[in-house]
Each structure stands twice: as C-alpha cells, then as structure tokens.
Image 1 (tube, rainbow, N blue to C red):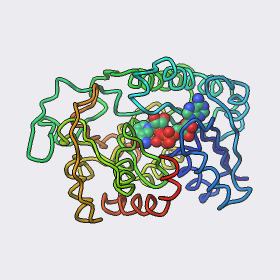
Image 2: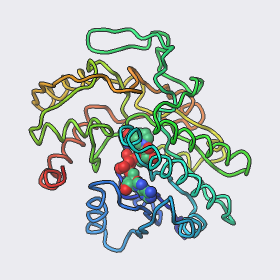
Image 3: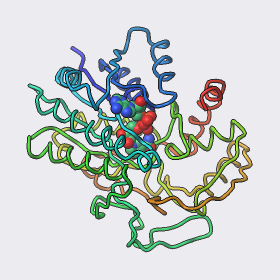
Length: 344
Ligand SMILES: NC(=O)c1ccc[n+]([C@@H]2O[C@H](COP(=O)([O-])OP(=O)(O)OC[C@H]3O[C@@H](n4cnc5c(N)ncnc54)[C@H](O)[C@@H]3O)[C@@H](O)[C@H]2O)c1
C-alpha cells in the first residue's frame, strides 16, 4: 500500500513541487491550503489538469480548521507543514495575522500530531530569519558583495537565535514548538531552517522569492528597485535539491528527528544581487538598470548556510548548479508569462 503525505500550504511554491516529486515516488499526496496566496490557485489548476484525479485537495485554514487537521494528520505517514504567511513586510503591517497563521497554525498542526494514534513524520520549514541580523558578525565589504569575515563556511546552527521582525518571531516560535513537541511528546519532528529556495511555480514578490521576482519583473519589462547597496548576499537552493532532502529525512527519520538543520545552497551557491544581475546579463542577455532605495529593517547583510550538520547526519548536499537552476526558473517564467502578466 502506498504511503500517504499531507502537505499543508500545498498549493504554494514548495508545496506544488513537493506534490509532484512525492507522487512520482509512489506517495499518495493530499494538499491542504486556504489558497490565500495570490497565484497559487493556478498551481493547483495546472496540477489537476496535468494529472486528473491524482491529487486530493482539501480547502482548509490552519488557523481554524482543527477537526480537518486532526483527521488529515492522523491519516498521514508524513506531514510537510509549509502553510505560512511568508512576507516580512506583511508581518510588520499585520503582526496578528502573521502570528495566527505561522505560530498558532503550527501549534494547531502539532496538536493534531500529538493526538494522532500513530504520529506521522513531521517536517517543519523554518527560516534563516530566526538568526536575525547577526549584528555582532564581522562583515567586510568587497566590490560586489559583503562577506562574513569569521565564518568562511557560513552560518551554522550554533549561531545565537535572534528573532527579528514579527515574521522572524512567528516562524521562530513555531520552530521552537516543533522542536519541543518532538522532545516532550516524543514525536518524529524535524526542522529545516531554509535559506532562499527558488524554482518553477514560484510567484515571487518583492519581499519573498527574490530570484523569481527579479526575473518576472525583467520579463514584464518593469523597473527594478534594490533596497540597500545590492551587495547583500544569500545562498540559494534549487527546489529539487530541497525535495531530495525532505525525502532523505523521511527515510532516515531515526537519525533526523529532534534536529534543526540550516539548509541552503551553501557558499558555492551564494551570490549578491549585483552578481545575480551580472549572471542574468551573461546567461540571458538582460540589461538591469536598478533604482536604489533604503535598506529594509531586519534584512541580513549576508546569510550563507553552513550545511555541515545536515551533511554529517543525513549525507545531503546540494547538487544543482546555480546556472542550471536559474535556466529552469527563467524557462518557467517565460512560458507562464501571459498568466503572470494577468496576475501581477
Ligand atoms: N521559499 C523560500 O525561499 C522559503 C525560505 C525559507 C522558509 N520558507 C518556508 O517554506 C514554506 C513554504 O514556502 P513557499 O515559498 O512555498 O510559500 P508560498 O506562499 O508559495 O506557500 C505557502 C502556502 O500556504 C498557504 N497558506 C497561507 N495561509 C494559510 C492558512 N492560514 N491555512 C492554509 N494555508 C495557508 C498559501 O495559500 C500558500 O499556498 C513557508 O512556511 C515558508 O516560511 C520558504
């Protein structure tokens, strides 16, 4: 009998890719989403059109629908808990909404896990924002990027937690609850503190999904604004690499459970905005002429994930090169442009 996976936030970028990935590997997949994020309804429609009858969809809200969560979590062998309010800016203007979705919604899902007769594996997608701005880090400014002088391999899980912005607080609270539910109720939970993830089906906005946002803006011939110098650095991880990691964690849950892991493209896949624009010019012929605005509060100057812990425990590391990953994202934006133009 096939195993059953519940994906909360399943119509979103990571969710829709995960649905395909796990269904292709024999899982029965149930997507739960309230469809609040703009664009995600199209992800769902396309998935169903390409795969009639293959996926179950449950329209529900992780804030309110406890009975549905109880039923769906209890019926699953694994839960990917992705449902979230994902934009820092929205969290600043509406911190209660952000808290209710990210913190309370996660608590509700964990309660369903605690009550389940045979609790499934529970994967929580946290964020590198739980480390805040890392103000004490020694940051050096070079010609095209900032560097973390004392952390040549990036930021490990030993970095002090420092929740900054309501989004940082709500995701950090959820991250903490997931780890503690694993400990105090002996549940098979894992936390992944993800850096920037990118790939097809990502309706990026200025504040989240920045690689997709810039490519979408360029193909729509819209102006580009950079907040700060453009030297801020992120490590970026292609979606398929992330999904491979989820699969490895589920298969090796005895080793993964109880841990929080920093996950990203690592130093080899780190780049600044300025370097990204140079890449887009070389690989795709885009001439980017950005306007510059003020740096945004809580924006880390540099974040690169040190993936050593996950490599040691699960043997995972990213394999998709940045150039290949961007080709794929660029191709999806290009092919989806009429729909994207109607949405944005
Ligand atoms: N994409 C990234 O770069 C990244 C990085 C770090 C962490 N994460 C985390 O990964 C998860 C998925 O991110 P994503 O990029 O796929 O985002 P996304 O916005 O594309 O997907 C989130 C989904 O959750 C749904 N949702 C929102 N509120 C809900 C609610 N109350 N009830 C049910 N569904 C609800 C949305 O409609 C959307 O489909 C999030 O938890 C996010 O914080 C993502």
